[in-house]
Length: 175
Image (cartoon, rainbow, N blue to C red; front, side, top):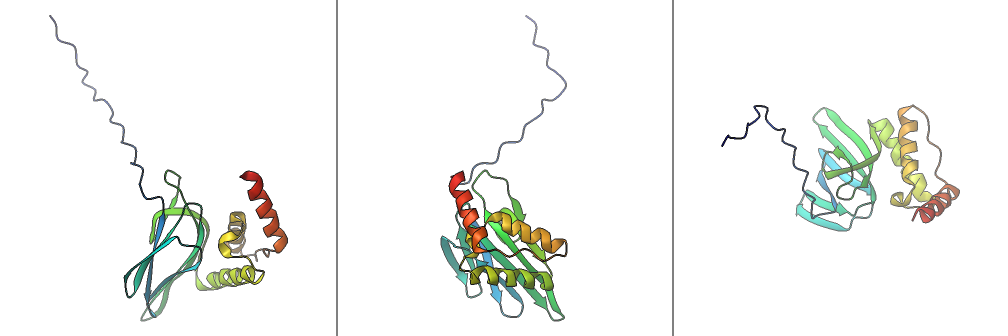
């Protein structure tokens, strides 16, 4: 009886799919060391918070939640990082972008570096809150609009109560 002929070409090994995580939350590590490292949440509704020590804590967001994450750092010569991101927490299995201090990551709706632009975004957030809308409730497309306008060197359009009502109706129709 003859032996089966074995191929000399190795079979490709397919990578194993990533195991689904049991934790559906997006975790953000916040650090506050006065005048050195200041990472904080500008807006958002965390579902869990854990204090690690006097200067660090972790806040967690449910899938779909939108939050603003501000990072600022300085050394003896001045500011080295000034950044704000508006992020949508993703569900397990969804595509995401990585972001320092955010696990696993999220959908980045707005990303701005440099104090002049960060200041404009913070002022825009203040204006949104002045009309009585929490930043986490703003239409995600509006945060993308703000990002794109600032990157192009233009002022973003104001978020109005009428725009917010239109977003709420759209969300209602999509549900």
